[in-house]
Image (cartoon, rainbow, N blue to C red):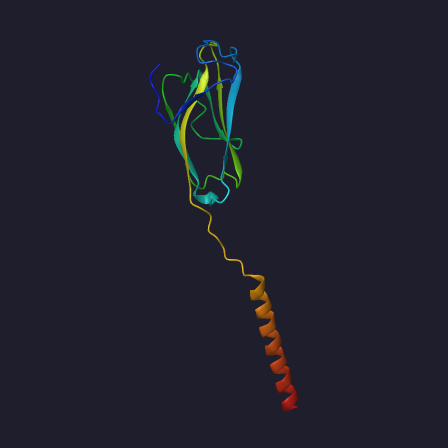
Length: 159
């Protein structure tokens, strides 16, 4: 097996130790790995996702909040080569708060199975809108009251 980048990781069944050749996935079982990531405070229209992944053995896709990322479900043996993926800003797949990325695959031989993922989520912070303080409202109402009182007094003097 060739090496992977330092910021990537193989993800496998938690009960499997690194020296065990058996993963417990079984043969022909569809399996998945899920990870949550938080987008609170981001402008969702600017959020994008890109990276590469592998699955031992057959790829069934990357899903964001249940939505399939295009080009990731080839149903092909995908262990030997990195597969690039990307999701452009404005895709509509992301939600405010917690999001789920799910990797799906299938084992063909029950030996050394797992997922590998290296990805980047990018985006801009949501714009902050100024909210007037309660004192501002009180001053506005007092000003309108004075204006109304002045208009009323003028009517009384001219009548």
